Length: 152
Image (cartoon, rainbow, N blue to C red; front, side):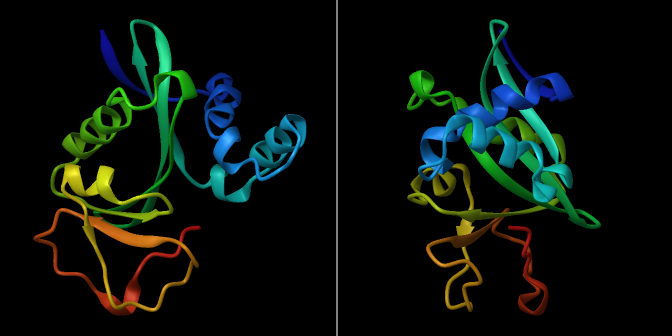
């Protein structure tokens, strides 16, 4: 059984651990975990997890950016479950909850996953985050280029 769940404080360490191999950047696991626990950015959002048969397999954070506009960040799946579609399932569940909202994300991986779900790249913008691509969903939204999100 697959279920989208709003994370509780007791879920956070397992959520943070999902990204250690990618975002740990040479830190010890202990230092990485402490940095996540004290992250101001992480405290500003709401974490969600995808549970499959009682096991937490994927997670992401949502930020309320403005009325009807959300930011998605820190999408991760436990390493042994990557490539099985859980990140896609998690994102689709989130997008289906608030179908009339505009979603942004800063993508620092290949954009193929997000494009397959329906996200569109914003091109020809002044990138605020080197190596990241700003994407949005759904594609029929009129984007205010003077107020692009900066929630990194």
